[in-house]
Every structure is written in structure tokens, then in C-alpha cells.
Length: 190
View: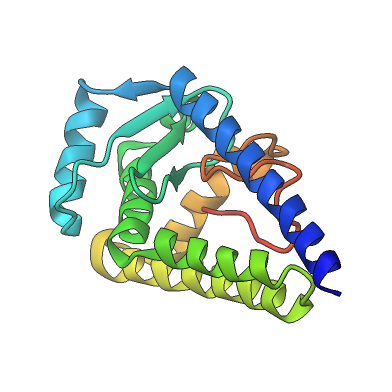
């Protein structure tokens, strides 16, 4: 029984290593946004959100959905078509969502639960817990953004989520480091 568990753990570790390498290649190819109106707005959003770390903003064509990636050195990632198609107000809401996720420590908590899933790879209950945690994390983050930062109605924020290019396209490569073959049990990250 121990050999079976260790072999499953080895497969999960190889999978993690593969995803980590792909994410590092992604970060090497991506373009950091370090000037212009979007950068200044992002820096203002960081202060407004109460984030006291230097979180870089990355714009990349191959990403289909906004997200934040990296546990120890997080980066907010936006698809180029999202930057081009959303209004300034809508873009601010998307950026605030990702910054709230960072401030709340959602990435660290999510990856901690992923570690538990790796260790308990055979247990469907931990995978369901991961899925439910991810859903609740997104709901809590959306609620905070609507209540605190994106003045207006929840309906306007919902329209922003639907207007995102990723809401209309099939995902190939997600900004949070999960790829098409990554966890089937997780939901799309806003």
C-alpha cells in the first residue's frame, strides 16, 4: 500500500515540477508593464487596496484570463486583449480583484490546500474541499471588491466579468499557472 501511495505522490510531484517549469518559461516570455497610464493606475490601486509589496503587472498575449501567479513572488497578469477591450473602470475592478486575492493571502492558502491534495492524492474529499474552497475564495473576493472598491452595483461588476475576453473564449493558458490539463476539480479564476 505504501508503494502505491509513494508512486502516486511521485506522479503528482512530477506534475508539479512540470507546471512550475512551464510557469517559469511563461514569466520569462511575458512583458512587464512599467510605465504608462495603466501602470500608474495599477500602482494607485495597490496603495488603495492596502498592499505593501511590490507586485509587478504583466501583460501577455497567450493568457486568456486575468489572474495572479506566484506564491513567493506574485505577479498580476492581464491578457493584452483584456487591456484593449475593457474600459478604465472595468479594468480597475479586475485589477482590484487580483490585488484583494493577494492581500487576503488566497494564493498561499490555495497552495497549502494543494499540498494537502498532493499528499492525499487518492482521497476525493480533499479534491472536493479544494474545489469548494476555490469557489468560496472567489465569492469572498468578488464581494469585497464590489463592497469596497468598485462603486456601483454588483450587476455592473458582473457585466465586467462577463465582458472579459476569457468569458467568451476557450482557455488554453491561464494566468494563475494552471494549464488546460491542470486540476479538473478547480474552477476558472477570475
